[in-house]
Image (cartoon, rainbow, N blue to C red; front, side, top):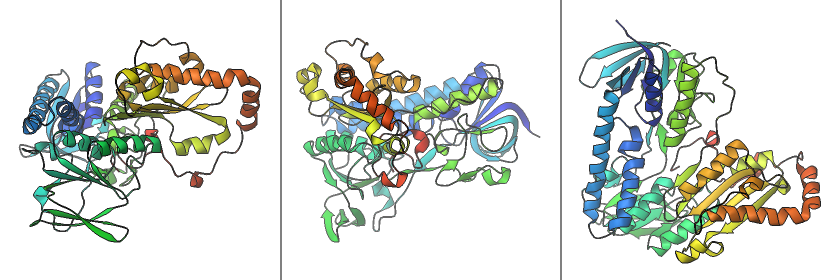
Amino acid sequence: MYDQFHTIVIGAGSGGLTVAVGLSSLGKSVAVLEALHVGGDCTNVGCVPSKTLIHQAEERGTLDPDGVLAEVRRKRDALREKETHEFGEIPNLSLIFGRARLVSRTQVAVRLAEGGERMLQAENIVIATGARPRKLVIPGLPEQRMLTNETVFELPVVPHHLAIIGGGVIGVELAFAFRKLGSHVSMIDSSPRLLTRHLPEAAEAIEASLAAKGVELHFKTSVQGYDEAMQALQIERNGKIATLHEVDYVLVAVGRQRNLDGLGLEDVGITFDLRNGIAADSYGRTNVPGIYAIGDVTTTSAFTHSANAQGRRVVQRIAFPWLPATTPEPFYPSATFADPEVATAGMSQRDLATRYHPALIKRIRVDLVTQTDRGYTDDLQHGFIIVDTVRLTGKILSVTIVGPRASEMISLFTLAIQEGISLYRLYRVVYPYPTFSSGIQKVADAFMRETLPNLRGELATYLRYRWARPARVADVTVPVGARAAERTMLPGE
């Protein structure tokens, strides 16, 4: 016997809850199936605890480091309980704890957390099961000394020496936080630099800041093994073995893998692969009618905010199927909450090179340290805005911001890219003084200074290269803050 619903949502993370709340508020009966905790990665092992840790580390530093970790867990648990209660009380929404498996295009079997099985049926099914950290096998390293973002916040005491494997977003953020709490921190990455998905200039600023704070950086380096008796981690670079001493914990942040196993995707014919996830269009529709996929299980989403945005589009498609469904998936901004922050929006360097001739692109850089009065008053050490724009037109293609509150500043550029707002129009925007955001005005100023006195030359260049053949994809090797749709891996990889 199947319990009937309008929509079944598998996964109670950001994307799944967005769909569930949106549809239930429109009077649709929704079942939300969750295998562990409401809130998904964001509430439990991602955004909320990590940003609490970053804030507490900045505020309290080495005064009470173990108390900081306890406060992180307290706030995380309080929010989880609050969300579980609130979502459990929403009309038309049934919150069911258990593991789901697709039985058919419209049917789902749930192995309940309290035991037994429940069968559900709905005309729409949304898969939003997220992702989990990828593990490494390190010879000699006991399981209790290996951490991921799922376990690091459970530490009762701050590590004496934390070795972080992986120079992506997760590794960088936690390196800053634990260093501020007093841990000796070593970062190890096989790449030649950190944050390889960002502009080299952004990576250089973050590396300089980490080094200034006493974090050891080991690039083009691999981990060979661990000696438990000596608490020593062996690393290798260019054939030479070195030892990191008194390492009590190793944090693995080398990427994530999508939670696709056990869902029965093959049984109902859903197109997917383990590397790219579930194939879905810009409105979350898979190749099987009535089944949608959003969030980390897809190729195009790698963030909490992108999963939320995808969820909103799915609500529109399910609740209002007569509305046009032709708009492409938007560009998703990204933010790394380091010190300083790094935020990006727009096209990747690869995409730029395949769509535009390099002579057509004008790059503008404004140094927040020397070109804004707020940088002077705050003794800023690292900060800049880099904008790639189309010559003559001022169309904004890609933006990278490094500096305080970069995560807040990027939203104006995200809007400009999405709505086609050019630098000519941003030139007319008035910014409070003195602020770091006035750097945006200086970007527009620089564009106007370089363009208006040379309109004839800019027009000639535009007409010559607007339809010229761009570079080949194989010729492009440096990625930048990207459109999520181009990603084949998740943050930290």
